[in-house]
Amino acid sequence: MLNKLSESIYYLSNQDEKERPTLGLVCGDQFSLLIDAGNSTQHAKDFLLEIEKLNVPPVKYLVITHAHWDHFLGMNEFDATVIVNNKTSELLKKWQSYTFDDSSLKKYVNTNQMSTKCMEIIQAEIPNRTSFKLSSPHIIFENTLTIDLGNKVCLLERIKSTHTDDSTIVYIPDEKVVFLGDAAYGTTTNALFHIKQSLLLPMIEDIRKHDAEFFLLGHESICDLNEMTIYWDELTAASQSVTSPSINEAIENFKLEMKRDPNENELFFMKAFVNDRIVQSR
Image: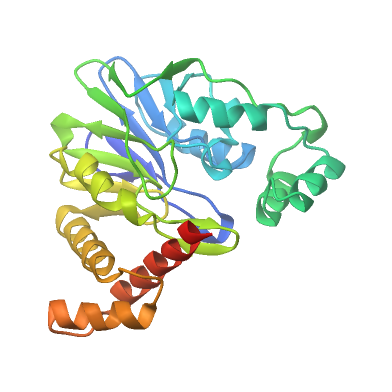
């Protein structure tokens, strides 16, 4: 079921057990725009079935927030103009060259080009895999792009991100809503989860320059301004405490600066920033 945020904005909640991220729908007077295509043919079809239940303008655009499989593998199902930034376009070319029979999928997993979970979802939720080929995007932008849906403007912007180098956010100014995709998360390198410390403050600045009251995230669905402010504050405090690849030193720095112990979230973030120090030193 689609969740209604306003008269013109809906979202399909993330389903972590199925590796399904949040998908968005923004409606203008003339057209509708989708944010992310889902992790499979079936995910996309489920989204389309929910959209069909609404009396909304026809879907004209589909924005892919970044080139991680769970956000784009369903895009062939949509009769829409697919929009990506130029870095996402480059990264998608590898997937456009893939074949999806069992033998090929196992090869991609064995060479770390694809996760086992991705392979399993493709096998279960993309029919006719032997002939499946990922489509190409239609519009490629560099930094920003404005889309007018008819009295409803969407601003697309490639931002600095702790998650990927190709993160696009979608901001709807009159609604004070921003779809972040996975931009505000960390990433995994060589099985080590980390948050890119050098990009944290630039990312927060890129997002906070938009006057937003609601934030749609890829794997939490929706946060209000107060919740996001707490998130930013905890991330920032954790980052400031990490000056070396030592969690013990970071904890002591945190206690000295904040005059308290870190909470559970802050401790998790601190470990991720310590891991980033380790990743960067290799």
